[in-house]
Structure formats: structure tokens, C-alpha cells
Length: 263
Image 1 (cartoon, one colour):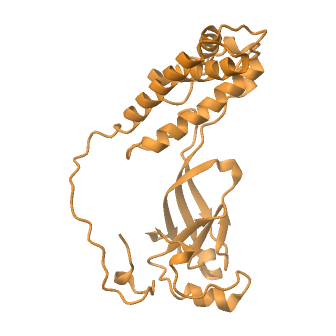
Image 2 (cartoon, one colour; image 1 turned 60 degrees about the vertical axis):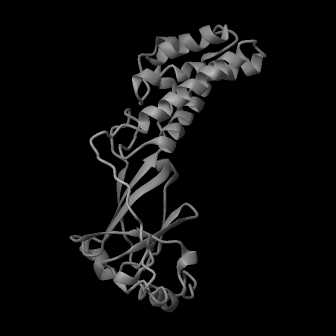
Image 3 (cartoon, rainbow, N blue to C red; image 1 turned 45 degrees about the vertical axis):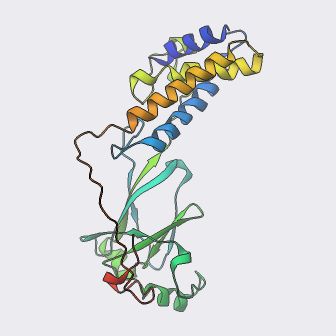
């Protein structure tokens, strides 16, 4: 469905017109539900990763490392929702998959970010062939940090993440919303949810009697979306096996490569 079709359907379902459901109000509600759809998809998707098909770039970013810097804020403009993978190179050539870690797991004192000695002592616990990262406070904390010589050699992080869909704007339509030919960036069979959702929003606002029916229909579409996106990758044979953690390590010295506590 085009954005114009969705607008017409939403007004039809809510028994409204452009007079009591303006283009501006309808666009807001469509975008609210557009963002809801991506959360439905990310909640249920299998290994087939979703991204708004209207985007012209992939959610894969190269982040240059800075000498002696531990934390790298994630720009709000990236609209990141989930981090999928992080790889790090300290020499600009060899990349190593960084494993997640929470600062609560580190059994050693963590000093001030402004203390060169304390930060260097912390770095010494982590080999550069097995880097670790912690996501907190809207930033990526990397262990160990890069040195000045490594930065000169091209040290960087390569991050893959899931992000929000790109909201529709007034430039996505011509004189009125119903003239638009723009289409949503997820699978076509589920586009009607962007009509049923806004129609239910308007029904709440106007206390319309069809609210219960509209909410039921949006729930049905949500179930179908989750079913479809949880079964995208079919070229995979799954098997159930035992997961045996390694409890042989004594202490959590992260520089001991084979003795890291991992599930």
C-alpha cells in the first residue's frame, strides 16, 4: 500500500475526513504505528535482520578509535535500538570480534576515566586479540583502549546494529497526504496495520464505537507480523544440544583467553 492508500483507509475505518482528521494529525499517528511495527519485528525476528527498506545505507558503522579513549557516545541521529555485533582492529588490518561484558563482571577496581594510571591498569587485563565492550549510558565502552600509534595505523570499531525506521515527513507527499506514492519499508502484506492503528488512535480521540473492532484487527496484524518475521530464514537446520559452561577458571582475569566465563 502507498502512504496515500493508507491515509484513505485510516479515514475510512475511523469514519473521518480531512476536516476532523487532518493530514498533520494523521501523519503523526502513522509514524507512531510505523515505529511500533519495528519493535514488533525486532522482538520476534530470526537471524534475517530487519532494516527499513527505504534506507539507502546499511546500519553498519566504522567508528575511528581515539588514543586513550574508553567511551564512544552513540549519536542520537543513528537511531540505534539494538547492537548486533562489534569488531575491533588495533592495527587497521586484523579485526577481532569483541565480546560483550558488563562492568559488574570485572572483579578488579575500575578507576576514574580521567586517571591514566588506573585506566592503563584496567587495559592490562584485556588482550587486544580478545577485546570486550560494554553498552551503557548511550555509549560503547571498549576494553582495552587504543594507543596513539595504533590510532595512526587505523584502529577502529566496526559496529552492526538495529535502528528505528525513518519517519514519514511532509515531503513524502505532495499537496495532501492522500496524493502520496511513498510506501512503508516493511513487507507489503502488513501495510494495513498503518491504517488500522491510526484509525484506532482517532477512535479513542473521538470516542467512536468501532474502537474494539479496530484494536482487535491491529492485534491480529501484530500477531501475523511476529509470525512472519520469526520465520524469515528457512535455509537453516536447527538442533538442540547441551550448553556446558566452563567453570574451571579461578578468578576472572580476562587476559587468560581460555578461562573467560562464558555461556
